[in-house]
Image 1 (cartoon, rainbow, N blue to C red):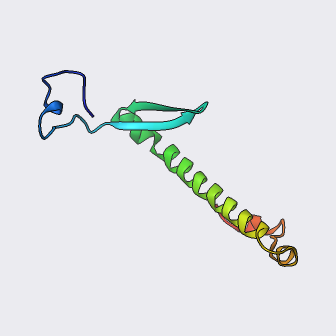
Image 2: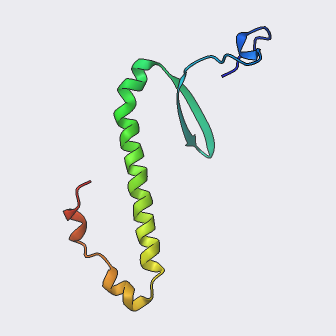
Length: 92
């Protein structure tokens, strides 16, 4: 990152940037929100970040499966649909 000081090393050629910084970025009400975390916060929140990443992966997988099912002809779709009990078999 570069700072606002005019004579700082981050403005040199080549620049020596500040950091490393730990950032948590997300979208809130359609706007990007970034928060700088301390090392302690990053360590404490890491399992939450891992869970959120896994949840996004599962949602993407579910969306892909749904698109594949609905893009097949109707007769094939009826054979490919998952029975309600099958979801309980999969470990998440």
